[in-house]
Image 1 (cartoon, helix red, strand yellow):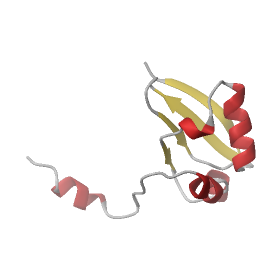
Image 2 (image 1 turned 90 degrees about the horizontal axis):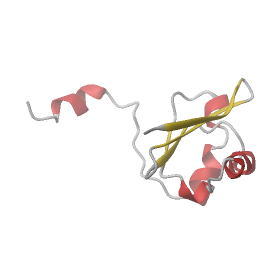
Image 3 (image 1 turned 45 degrees about the vertical axis):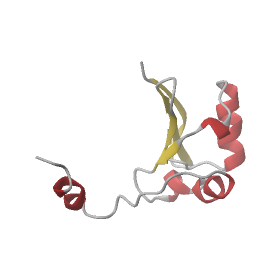
Image 4 (image 1 turned 90 degrees about the vertical axis):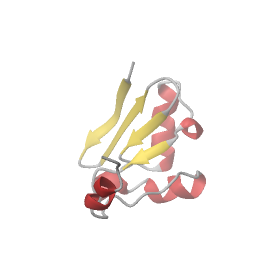
Length: 93
């Protein structure tokens, strides 16, 4: 079962926590590292337990905390701005 927790949703920062119990992701990272970590702690989650970050778009209210988070934690990186056609063609039919 998926669980969602909106850590923040405003023009000053957006961040959504999602977990299925075995993997945890953040959708957007528009808060400071300290604020994100603090809010995650309030729901019993350590920021080091985050497996990935999905950024919906490149506005600062969705990305302002991303730089510090990426410097403190390693995540696989995929640039989704590349044409999705390349992904579609690589799927066997």
